[in-house]
Length: 445
Ligand SMILES: *Cc1c(COP(=O)(O)O)cnc(C)c1O
Image 1 (tube, protein in one colour):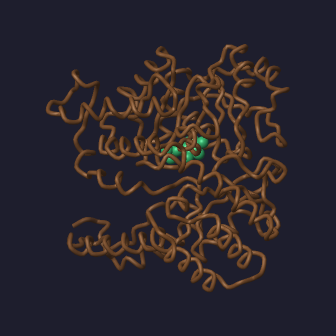
Image 2 (cartoon, rainbow, N blue to C red):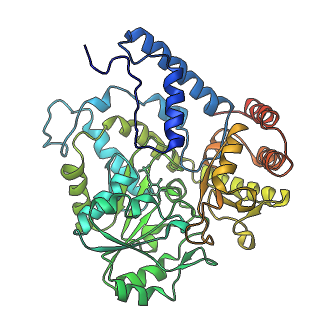
Image 3 (cartoon, helix red, strand yellow):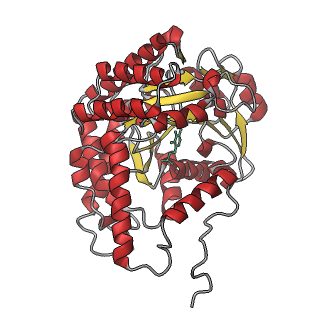
């Protein structure tokens, strides 16, 4: 007999009290299912959970969370569950495994499609995520103890750029780039002196909130003068970049481009590293395999191929709709009385919108209230927040609602519902009904 049988499964006793209370509540709801269940019982429960999860997000929710998307119907059609469990290690022609002849074409097609889209000679597509892609770059181009310079967290610098994330795994010293809050960009005047002092090996731009393009050419000039490499993390804006919108980081001067394939890009989860430089390409590719992956889940390649081809074929129409939707939503939120970032610059040049909700209780509290009404998004720090201050902002991305068929008119309704809930004291259950109605009445992909 298992000595733990029948005991309450405390999954993470080291987690916060709030998380532990939620996990205890969830465990109680599972009614002892972990205690030698039949496979049929688990199957029934899993089915129920998946159905409800799908209903909440895909059928009834208005998902404004910036770091997500739904794959197109065609991409979903080719998402095979069996491929991922058939490891493929090494280049076609010299693999560790035999019998992968029908996978070889996908392994050639996908990097070729993606490198063309983003304007690069090379694309490494085997990283499981952008976080792992970033770790591959750090592994390839830095030694433990080296310095990298990244955007501060309040400017959307991602965990995978900071010490708590993969730079810490590599033993890097991480310093914040000087930031110009008014420009929503690196402080160009302060940059050369900063680079002179800090001597980073690598400079990372691109962020989890990107309202306006980086001035890459000027940044690159300073970074090159300092003998460092410039990496642009386009995780959020990859769908726009691939469509030739927002900005073309490699053409404008970035040495390396990394991104997630499941956010605005709209494909399966995964990470890409692209570059024009063959020497960098070889280094990062070798860091991805054999250093950081064995089986890389080739199941991702089929939907990724279809997604990349669709982006190429639609000529930027989807990206344009995402940007137009973001501007319309931002303007509507502003008219409703919200404090929307970037007001003096037309709010946004991307599919992102940021709202300062410090006076409404801060990002986390407002996120929770909106979720009660079936509107899902996240909190985010804003460039003007004080050190140590809790996230002031809400971050919105339009990439999913556009796929779902919501147009500018529906987004104005969404802005009004957000104002009803947050500014006019409406009841979340009432707002939720209106949210579900918008989803039911709007065509969905
Ligand atoms: C979301 C995000 C990542 C992480 O992407 P994953 O694919 O989930 O690992 C990395 N960098 C930035 C800037 C991001 O916003």
